[in-house]
Amino acid sequence: LDLSVIERFRSNRRVNDFAFFCLVAAYCVLIVVGTIGNSLVVYVVARQPAMRTARNVFVVNLAISDLLLCLITMPLTLMEIRSYTWPLGNAPVSCKMVGSLQAVSIFVSTLSITAIALDRYQLIVYPTKRSFQLTGALLALGGIWVLGIVLALPLFIVRTLEHHDIPIPNSPITSVDYCLEEWPNERGRSLYSIGSILVQYALPIITVSVAHARISNKLQTAGQSAVAVSRTELNAAATDCRTAAREEKLRKTNTLLIAISIIFTICWLPMNTFNVVEDTWNVFGDDTETMLIVYAVCHMVGMSSACANPLLYGWLNDNFRKEFRRI
Image 1 (cartoon, rainbow, N blue to C red):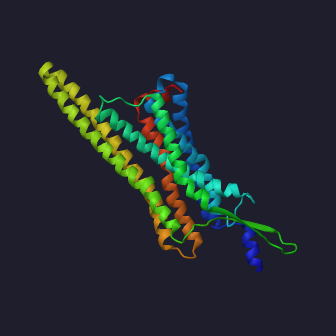
Image 2 (cartoon, rainbow, N blue to C red):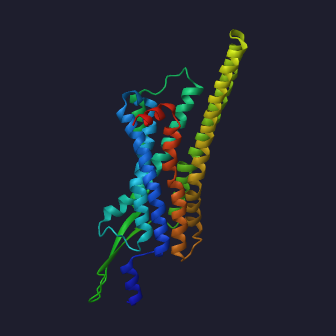
């Protein structure tokens, strides 16, 4: 066995030290910011009984799934980017669980965003219909987690650990382990990537965008009706004040809805594009280091949603903001 090969396995580095240092620094920023923001959202709802509404249950679920992204997905991704071999030893379940947990947290996060959009849509566009009660919201969350687990199940099935002994006297490396994906056919991985994009990206984008467009249209129509009524009942000065306040609130709501749709689209586009391109055409060939660096950058853009979500769904909500200031 070539000594350079032994040295490569001993160093166990798939990317150069400088690139890995930059990746660690960037991931650490995302982990710290995302963990603090999402922890505050969970803490506020747990601390204040008045915040424990059916609507906020969806926001808390999003925060919990984003905490999983910060505390599990990001560190494990760094670990896999760094190592040629499986660093957790000859434990097959660890190989299966790591990939599955990452997929579950991503699926649950995006499904939670979709659920929040649908909940707001039902509340504003059809206000006379009975909305979610706390029990119903909890059942819906259970369904989200079950669906997330089912969608990640193929990864649990196909990921397998290969153990190889290295029978070389006085070698610093006695064995190596590889965590691999063994799909039943060569197109299995690309088909799973395409299916994941449809469920985790395309469908949520369409749902969130349509729901927010309908909400914006409903608020605009309701605002115009309210102004017409006010002009028949109030003097001009009072009407102008109320109209200005209503228009300002409508503007903020529309801006927030647009921001949610745009940020979701931007955050997850690079990662999903990378998965389809790499799984289908293998554009990087044998250049593993470049592929891993590009993958890490795309992955970090996706993970930045875990930092943006507390801002969009928590800090920009008046009730959440009041509770944050009390902490």
